[in-house]
Length: 410
Image (cartoon, rainbow, N blue to C red; front, side, top):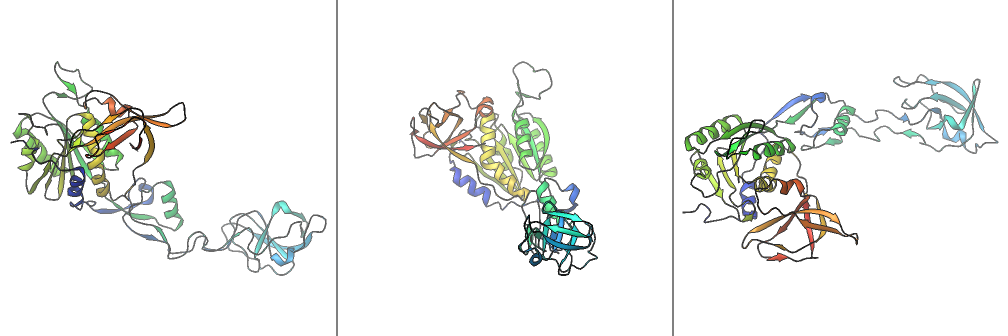
């Protein structure tokens, strides 16, 4: 009996993955300097106002705005300099009517002042300063809490901590931050015909494309891949390798051995590893039909086809969202563009079909989608050449030439 007698639709397969309720394997606290590219696991609120005081945004003189009204080039306002305000210290002066305090960018506004005149609009003459341009109340002043208010949420869980986010956390005094643990993903290939790159290629074998492309795809999801090499088409060795993978990783990702040939042992082996076991084996898509999913305890095992294009596409459609959730990341909407089909694109009867396309502009300035022709789903150059894919639903026989299509970018 074929293991593909009952194929799930892509929506059904996604529904099965969603019901796994995958979550990060835990959280840990790390210093801010080691938090780059980690995923925030807590709500961070500010314990203070930023800036914590009214501050000058320019070099110049802190004044009472009313003292500058009517000031102009030919008739400047003349104010007595009552002191200097330096950055990094509390003001030691109090600005009274008719006075001005010299101030630098970032320094606190002294008591009594409510505006700052830019140094370019002044001329210092001994203990007096001439102001040639009037200012309004609050001009050139950043008010206390204008950037971040005390109690305000600075960042929410799920944010990737990069330079901007880490800068925001540092601004509110955070030294250590709680982040999600990085999920470990075991990656292995199966098949007696597969050989590791970097060594001479034996006769009749091919280099292991999938483990290397999938390993990198896992990295791009923010997870930590663990390469476990190539496992031959032997049930006992395959079972042992999968059990070892389950012990060290949160997710297991394999390629090959999921079709219906005599040496395609993956579905049966996955079913024997533990409960709940095999969840589905076969999805009504092209390419990628043999894709299989099992669950042992709370650990998912994704078995992808051996064809490189099929494996990477199904990773994109089913595995990546799962790893994304286990990383604790916010969901990110796919990037899509509208284009015009350069030629007719056919679907596989009864299966969701994904046509790899390359985008370019034609002479009329339109964005056109040209199918990447390879003649076989095993050609790795299909994805290397493609900018994205056009999805053709089961109910559509073909997309016609010059028909508008939506391309999801890789």
